[in-house]
Structure formats: structure tokens, C-alpha cells
Amino acid sequence: MAWSVNPSTDIVTFLMETGFLYGDMQKHQEARDVFKGVRAILPNSEVPEVALGMIAFQLGDFECAARHYRRALELNPRSAWAYAHLCELALFQTNREQARAHLKTAIDIDPRGDYGRLARALLDFVDVVRFQ
Image (tube, rainbow, N blue to C red; front, top):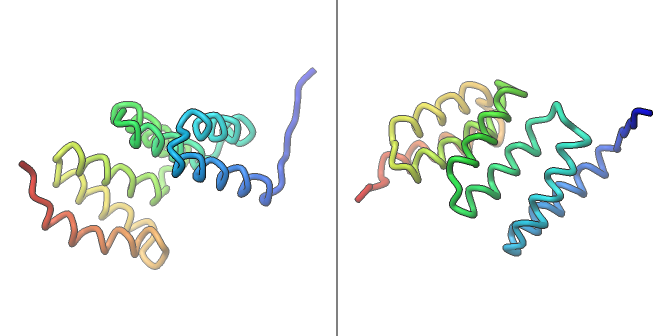
């Protein structure tokens, strides 16, 4: 017997917000559990993958974060959100050129949207970051 779940957008939004709230509260395992649950019911969506990457990033597990962000891009190669997080990861790994490339991709994908605007603002930031 196969199970089929088709949650409403409101339910998915509620679950994602719950996961983000857990992350903000430093309850990383709970956040991870929520995002894994969303991934289970929406296996073709990049959204829970990016969220799982964000939790890994918060925990300092940059390799795991990169895997989640790249998996998100496999699911949706036009995810400006995933590219924005890859930029953040590249900055923490002191790779300014890679960060800039990810931002330019995000801008190309979402020139007038929220992530495009964020990416344009971050381009200035990338140029002033000093690595020690």
C-alpha cells in the first residue's frame, strides 16, 4: 500500500515557519526534523533542502550545507535562494570570487525579486569583506 500526502500550501508554510523558528531558538535537531518532514512530503522541492543547508551552516558543518544547497539546485537549477546561500558559504570559506559568481547567478535568475535585490546588496558587501 502506497501512501499519498498532498498538504495545503498553508500547512507547508506553517511547517517551514516552525522549522525556521526552531532554528532561531537554536533547537537545531527539532528544526532539522521539521525540514526533513517537509522534504518527505515535497521530495521535488528545493525549499526544504535549502532550509536543511541553513541548519547545517548554523552548526558550522559547511560540507553538509554545501551538499544540501547543491541538492536544492539539482531539484531547481533556477533557485536564487540556493545561490544566495552558496554565496554566504563561499564567503565563510574566504572565496570572494565564488561568492561573487553565485550572487551574479542569483541576480540573473531573480532580477526584480527579493533574492535578486538581496544579491545586489550583497555584491557591495563582498567587495568590502576582508579575509585574515
